[in-house]
Amino acid sequence: MRFNARATSLAAAGIALALLAGGCGADEGDGSGNGGGGTKKVEVFTWWADGGEKQGLDGLVSQFKTDCSQYEFVNGAVAGGAGSNAKQVLASRLQQSDPPDTFQAHAGAELADYIKAGQIEDLSAQYKEWGLSSAFPKGLVDSLTVGGKIYSVPANIHRANVLWANKKVLADNGITSVATTLPQFFTQLDTLKAKGITPLALGKDWTQQMLFEAVLISDLGTDKYIGLWTAKTDWAGSDVTTAINDYKKLLDYTNKDRDSLDWTDAEKQVMDGKAAFQLMGDWEAADMDAKGFKDYSYTVFPGNGNAYQWLADSFVLPKGAKNPEGTKCWLKTVGSAAGQKAFNTKKGSIPARTDTVAADYPAYQQSAIADWAKDVAVPSCPHGSACSQGWQGAVNSAQGKFSSDGDVAGLQKALVAAAKQFAGK
Ligand code: GAL
Image (cartoon, rainbow, N blue to C red; front, side, top):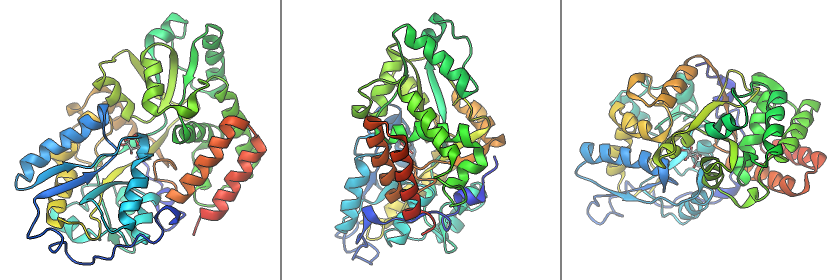
């Protein structure tokens, strides 16, 4: 894996506190006062409430129960893909100094939001104590580090730019191999459209960001794509215009109700054979498995070549957590080889640790482990590795508007403005 330092550096990433403004916790104590003599409960806040995501969490919890039997897991999950609801609930709890004992945060710029707001603790001492510094790739640890301090424990590496398909639908329509370029892909989508099948299933806001980013990677290539997030590539450039036009063309092949669907609703259209393809992160492998649907294929998005669009879920110790010792036990499990295996074999992701035994994993993850070892790592904005939450929000609303008005110049202008507002601050 070639982790690009520019893409993972928190210092280079835009930092926005819009969602988290004023959220600095008032309680600077070690939590003992809050726990009323030592609570056993460890509230773990995620958005993994259902399907493969829940199964991944359950795997981690079962390891926690073994490693940390003195503590009690409390599930603080708030449903909604990519944290679309959870992040708002969390922001308001942090503002009210009512943090869970730990919460899910994406490595990269999104984590930096919480660090800049003073909402999470430095875990450098735990990294030393648990031998974690050498357990993860350096580029990943860099994405968790600000000012020499490491702030979270990564649970996994997910890949965002995967094209999933219903194999039977493809075979029934004479599609024997998935396209490797955008023009080839458009031809296949035309074939499917002519048969009355939804060629490409799509959901709302953040899922549209993902599709657009996949097109940007195809049209700009990995270096220029990475540069979009580090102020090296101009969002006003003609290659970005080309990508917006390609993306607009792709929207014509998607379901009209896209703005009201979560990723699992779009996935269902594929599983039900109503749609052929879906661009989605590799949590989809676990979710389809969990739902008993086996007839799926996966390929990198057409034109993305050897780009591995990465994101990592990690867990933190919030300032003012009621049970910091219980949280540390959770974090130790998250970072352990056993914890990563229990979680990732069920979650569709690959372990963040480098001591993975690929044979322990399902077929999809085995192929992802092989790709991660050789591909080029590029970041994702909706999943926090590329941009802050403020930037995510600005792109989301621009794309939501574009989904209904299709105004290419309007979208590009909004993307330029978002980059200006958030990049490099
Ligand atoms: C991502 C998260 C993944 C998965 C996905 C869909 O942001 O990192 O673990 O949960 O959202 O909900």
